[in-house]
Length: 489
Image (cartoon, rainbow, N blue to C red; front, side):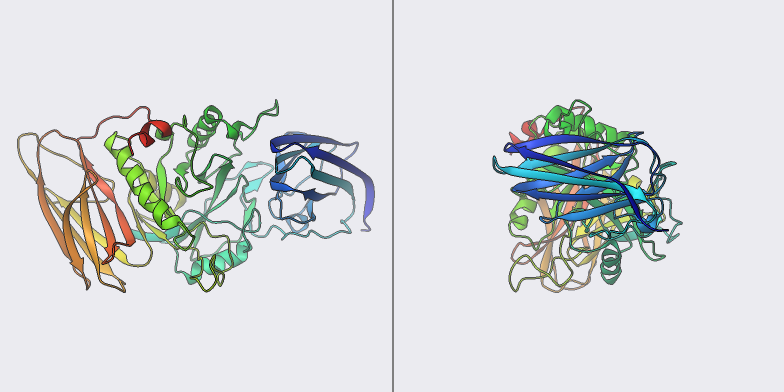
């Protein structure tokens, strides 16, 4: 069927410096077969577009690529750009909502809207959506892949990554291939304020939908997202740029059953600065973020201090890692430096089976190990009963409970040391130069709150891996803000 253009409209705006939310309306008198949107801008630091159909459902998403781009929406998936939801292109008022962060007073934004019948004669300049649907017009589709492995064990994965849907260089297919080369069991795909609407499947890798909520004062991940989040309201307010608004967004993600993780809290300029943000709404902290990026080693050390400070106040957040990969597998952030790869660092999660429900539940429980390479296999016994990282130790106030904490180490390429830390302070150290196991034995008694975690470091002190705590006699923490916990560091 020949392509017929029914209407072409243009919207332009000059922006003042700072964040803006722009809304443009486009009316269609009858159903169409396709919509085409060309996006051009100048002197914007960041720009994202969300196109809503007459029912208010987000049908198209786009992140600026510093060049003019064309995105498409059609009835069939093969006629849709990445991030679009295929289906009927109905009559009524459509809206393009634009989040723009202008750098100068003469910043410019331009939309060219076209709709028509037949098959669009123009091609998308971004990849086409390929794979099984993660979002459909019948309702948001939670991705329920068949269980990939049915055994209880430590599964290796990555909780933070980007593709060409936002500001990453790899396509979804390339990222899947990279993940398999890194021998990952699972990934969670976390685009900046976007959700993938389709994803290529593989019978050896579990992929889950996520989102990195991205604001000027900090970023955090939604792991296992099932619905859109209220990043801005009907009045044109960017909710995500306000601490109270951000608290509401985190709460909305929790209601979906998602895991909420605070990202790279000390990595400038993307460090967390929402002073009144409620940390008790999070389930986890991304302690370790892409170690190949300049400044991340120091940021990880500060994040470990933050983690201990939260635990000291009774807020038992899980500690996880994420590669935050944006580059192609052979690329580095430094000339001649190591490549920035998916799965570096990797987060190992202990699950009874590899499934979405099991994985997210295990993270909430803190059954996690984060490593840049060495594989740690902890065997923890409390009173003769085996427990896992993240578990509570039952203590009889009148009798001592023996703790035997054994760790085997595989794949270590340099001499190192295992450090057991009680309430954030070292209590035992073992030199590591072979597989082990390495054992720390102690006794816990009384009613005092305590937690015990483990780090693996090189002989020069470089962080190689860490294990989430076990704990006893927990205390409650109903509220703890960012400014409160940082005042103690």
